[in-house]
Amino acid sequence: MEGDTLNQLEIGTGLIGGLALFLFGLDILTRALKQIAGASLKDVLGRMTGNRVKGLLAGAGITAVIQSSSVTTVLLVGFVSAGLMSTAQSVPVIIGANIGTTITAQVLAFKVTALALPLLSVGFFAGLIAKSRSTREYGRILLGLGMVFFGMSIMGDAMAPLRVHGPVIDFLASLDNVWLAVVIGAGFTALVQSSSATTGILIVIAGQGLMSLESAVAVMLGANIGTCVTALLASIGHPREAVRAALVHTLFNVGGVMIWIWFIPQLAGFATSLSPAGEVNMPRQLANAHTLFNVLNALFFIGFTGPMAALSLRLLPDRAGREEPEFAPHFLNSEFLGVPALSIDALRREIHRLGGLVREMLEAAVPALTSGSPLDVDRVAVMDRPVDLLHREIVRYTREISLRSLPADQSDLLVGLIKIANDLEHAGDLVATSLVTSARKRMEEGIDISPATAGIIAELHREVVDAFDGTMQALDAQDASLAEAVRARKPTFSSMIDRFALHESERLRIGDGKRLQTYTREIELTETLDDLFKIIRRIARTELGLFRAPPEAKPD
Image (cartoon, rainbow, N blue to C red; front, side):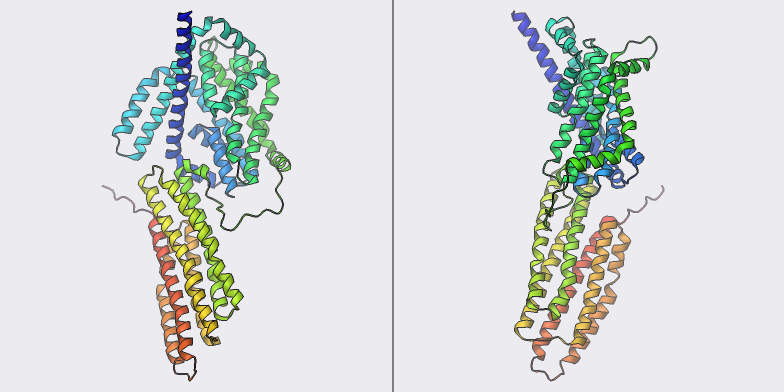
């Protein structure tokens, strides 16, 4: 009895320890791949269109790179939540993501356990001694792969004695009930939140001859349902468009399983026929079945992307009468934080939106402050509140990004973006304090600004607004030439300021009892506009540093 207990303990610790090592290695691998592929991932997802074939290929390619359909779907939820993609555009990407996961099964089906320790060694020491960040990340990829393979090896060794263990044999025999097998596959995958882990364990079990191919295929089908849990959990608290993207993922996976569950013997037979003649290789046959299921499923459902999006809308309609406040972030999604390139781009987009709020203040300021009523002035003053609140959210998100390990170029970009955000917030404060205070003094003193003076101030104001628009266009397009054009506006603006100073000196000669107070108020307005123009040029200078292409390396 004591020997049996010890044996069970060794088997249990081997299985659990091997699974822990597998999952830990998979996490290291996925994180490193996201760091390496982050910029290209941003570009691919950012160029998504309504073309379903491109979306399918993009979903398959991205998932093949980052090795997790759950991560791809979570990122899509973030994109839909941020308004960068519609639910309809996300459907083909979600369908393609399932194809990308087949790469994992195909790799694991090789006899890769012998590579575990070499990969662990090379990966660890590459990450330890490499000076280049990218080299360290490649080392972490090898380290993660080594851990995945080593975890499979440990689980395989632990399972070897189970081939003659009666209770285990009886339990695995019960999985001939395909519905039970599907439920177990779904439940386990939902628990560990990784269909790749379920696939890896199935390949180990199949390699030990503990399960029939049909039973393994049924468990694998269940894993496709269980992986939906991650995306559904990630969609909680997000806009309904994002929840619908997670719902589409669930509908696609569950619908595919419900179709294929009746054809498991045929699927297993087809997968077996693809193996080399005379070779009995259960892991390879299971990997082939996994690939066939996902590819055929995708090809079938890709023709129904529109109906799937419409069904998700019908199941989860929009809520009527609910509007987000202006200061609520649109792009700062926590799901992007795992991919610095995506989170920094989300920050850039939110800062551009902050600029839109400041621009509204700036556009409304001078007309209200030169000739508007007290109510008009008060409206301009309260417009600064959303700017301050959104700026606070931007700073919070920037801090979360900065807590991650960033390469030098991304760190420099992050610093530049927060400088732009701070300058925008400062510009909003100038409008809400200096301009509003000056306007209130003008009203208290009963001063009227002449039409001629108001016209010159309006020209200055238009020049400031146009320069501001140039910086926002540069930020949106990430185009240094647009920022350079803003910097080039300085002589024109300086000439306009000089012309206004000459106009004011001539106006001082007018015999008006309130001429000195009028002069003071008018000069306050133009000085504040001058300060705003300096802030705008400072933003443009920051953009030049961020978006100017690096000089080409000279040939040796």
